[in-house]
Structures are given as structure tokens and as C-alpha cells.
Amino acid sequence: MIKKILISITVILLTGLAVSAQNGRKLTFLDGVQAYTNGQYEISGKIFKAIVDKDPSNDAAWYYLGLSNVTTDISGAKNCLRKAMELDPRNFWYKETIARVYMYNRENDLAIALYEKLLEEYPEKTDILYSLANLYLAEGNSEKAVSTIESLESVSGKSDATVMARYNIFRQKNDNENAYKVLKDYVNEYSSPYVLTMLGDYEMGMYNDTTAIAYYDEALSLDRDYAPARIGKAEAYRMTRRYPEYFSSLNSIMSDVALPAASKAEYIKAVLGRSDRRFVQTFTSEIDSVLALGIECHPADTGLVQAAGVFYVQTDRLPEAAAMFLKNAELDTTSVAAAATYVQVLATMEDWDAVVSESERMYARFPKELAFVEMINVAEYNRKNYAAVISNCERIVKSPYADDAAVLRAMSTIGDMQYQTGEVAKAYKTYDAVLKKDPQNLPVLNNYAWYLCTEGKKLGKAYRMSKITVEKEPDNPTYLDTFGWILHLMGRDLEAKPFFKHAMLYGGKESATILRHYGTVLEKLGETDLAKVYYDQADKLPAEKQ
Image (cartoon, rainbow, N blue to C red; front, side, top):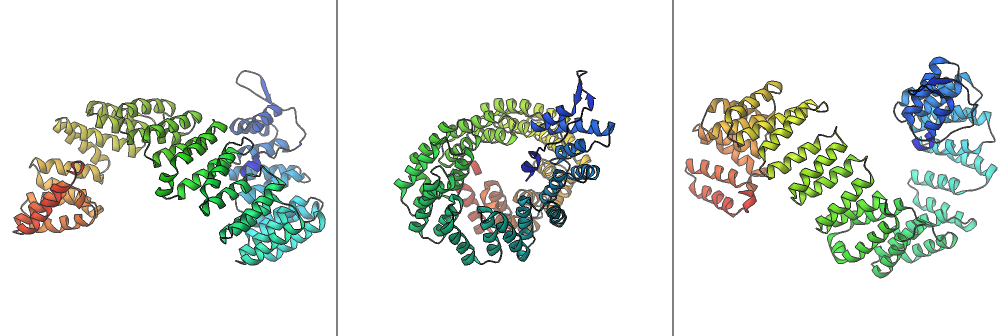
């Protein structure tokens, strides 16, 4: 709906009012229209704002100012459009545009009132009837919707739009039988690839694949390039396990330059998303071919490239996935998500050198996105380059784009690295600084308490800090382990036992350290047989969980 509003450029008398540009040239109304047409809404908004400031009676400038603000300030946009309508109350386009804005903003009552008034003024404009029928339907007023459709058909005859409106009315009433009868009756009178494809989809849902394919074929006889029918027919083959026909159809679809890339990408993503692992493994080479044909046909389409990357991840081919996600990030250099996905795949590959270099490159591209610096830290930590981690955290702390949470997270990591490198006093000082800003910072409270207790120092302080963590997150096995172990060191094993027992229910059995701590507590309490069970479980865990 936004797109429709933004591209509804109307024929309006262009005025000669001008404003100053930065280069000294006067920016005119025409410059504003050109900027708006090019999608430069911020620029066009500034131009038209300057014009209405100079001449508040310029209705056309108010109109374009409203259009320029639709995506960023819906309330302000409505005010501007209302102002244009007040200045020229006879202008159909001003009224129709604000009605569309009401529809977009789901202010259906206001939209209906305005469209009904427009219909009285312009009974010959059938587009108003389409809009009203959809609005009545959205409000659940099927009686008015039917009446409006009948009025529309009496003027213009039946069409795909009117039959779909009737179909939606029956669907809204959960009357599927009559909904599809409307479609069948329509195709008996009129030729419509769209409606025939819908009937094919319906028959597939009823497991009538032969009938479904017949509908798809009839749609394609009317328009051999109609993408939904071609995809529907291919899907019918897939659902009935006719895989040779399926992949033959899909290859034809993917290699057809006339079919939109978006439809291809959307379909292949849906198939891969709902397919089980067996299907993917069995037909890996066929799917590879499908994706290769699609990308060859549309080399700059990010949707298809992304689909290929996801498929490579599904089939455990991470280097190929990384190459695709890199291509995706370079095709759309404005997408933070594309860049982040690429870096995440590199991290999954544990290619830490690449994570550092590529995260630095993406951070230069998106200097506000501190997550890239944090990814660098993950890599540097795994490279045991703790000094670099500290340096990167200091970058975050100094960044003008770092919020309080990011700063505290960075300071916490600095403390962890200082402790890791033997600068214990500095680490504790850093932790104290974090807790001064955020006394309830649970990761810092836990780590600080753990380090104190492992040194056997200030157990009372460690106890108080750790107690906060288990009160705030009573199911966190790491916090439960820290608190339980502090109690053990204080000679309070009977009190410690229930915390370890609770940790076992929430992931504690996946940590050899927690299992051994529990075994130690049980042994102290004389439960040696049970302690041995947990010691054995700890010994059997893989190396990464030791």
C-alpha cells in the first residue's frame, strides 16, 4: 500500500516557487517533484517544506510534502494531505490519496467515509467501488461488500477483481464450498489464468492432483509464461513424488528470464524450508542445478543467492555457503543482515582470521553496527589474542554509537580478559566499575563471585553477589553452580546440594565441571555411590564439555 501511495504522482499545476540549494541555485517545485519521483523522499520533503513555509497557500506543495512523509511520519503526512484538501476541496486526487493513507494506517472507518463521499461526487470512477468493497470486507460487512460488487459489475461487468471479492466474502464466512463455486462459475464464462491457478491450488489442497494439473495447464494455455501456474504445476509433481517431472519443470522455470526472480526465490526458499533432510540429501545435485540456473538467469538477485547460501548450509557445505553469502553482501551493500550472515558463517567455519578481516571490513561499511566489533572479539578470543579483545572493547566504549548495554558488555569483557591475562587487581577494579553503573549485572556478579571463590578470598562478598544471580535467574545452571560451590567452600554442603540438584534439570549434566562439583558435594555428605555416578557422567562427556 505504501508503494501505491508513493507512486501515485498526479497531474498538478507546477508552481514557480523556489528555495535555495546548497550550491546557491534555487530549488524549484520541479526539483522537489523530481526528487520525489526518484524516491529521494527526505530531499523532496525538505524542498516542499521550504515552499509551504514561504507560501502556506500552495496546496500542491502540501500534497507532495504529505506524500514525502508517508513512510516516516504518517501523522504528519495526514495533516499535510488534509491541508491540501482544505485549500482545494474539489481536487479528487487529494481526497483519494488521503483515503489510501487511511487504508494503509488501518483507519478503515475514516477511509470508508471518505470513499463513500467520493463516490457521491464521482459516481463514474469505478476504482472507488473496488476500494469500498475491500474496506467493507475488511470490516466484516459482507452485505455492503456484496452490494458494492453488484454495483461495480452492473457498470463494468464481471472481472477477476469482483470474483475474488465474492470469493473472499464466502471465505470470511468459512463457506469454502461456495467460495470455490464462485471461481468455477467464473471460469466457465471467462478466461482467467489467475482464477484457474487458484482452482488448481484448491484441487491440490484436496489431493486431486490430476484435476489440479488440468487447471494449471488451462491457465498456461492462456498465458504460457504465467509464473504461479508454472510453479503450481511443478509443486503438484513434487507433492505426488513425480520427481523427474518436478525437476524438469523447475529447471524450465528457473532458466526462464521472463519469469520474475522474486517468484523463483520465494518458491525455492519455501520448498527448502519445509523439506525434510532426506529430500534434501537425496536430491542435492538436482537442487544445485536448479539454484545454479536461477542465479545464472538472475545473477544480481539477492533472493536467489541467499537461497543458495542457505541450501549450502543445510547440506554442510560451509565454504560454498560463505561464498554465496559474501556475494549477497556485495550485491546489497546497504544490508546489515546480509553482511552479518556472511560473518556468522565464517564464525561457524571457525575461520577466525577471516572473521577478523571481514568483520573489520563490514564495520567500516556500517560504523554504527558494533556487533561487528563484538564478532571480531569472538575471533580474537579464539585466537587467544586477549590484548586485541581488550583493545576492541575500548573501541566500543569510546564509540558514539554505543548504548549503555554495549558499554557495560564491553567493560565486562575487559574485566574477563584482564583476569585471563593475570591482571587480577585490574579485573576486579573493572568489575567494580561495571557494578557501580549496573548493580544487577548478572554476568559480572557471577564471574566476579567465581573468581573470588576460586582464590578462596572474600567468600562472604562472593556469596552476596552470587546469591543475587540465582534469585534473578533461578534456572541458570552456571549461576547455580557458582552459588553451590561457594556454599561448599563455606562448609555448607547440605545447603549447596539442592542448587546442584536443580542445575541438573536445566543443563547442568552437559558440563563436566558442574557434574564434578555436584559429586564433590555429595561425597562430603557421605553419598559416595551417587557421587560416583556423577563423576562417571563427567568423565564420559566429550572434550569440549570438560
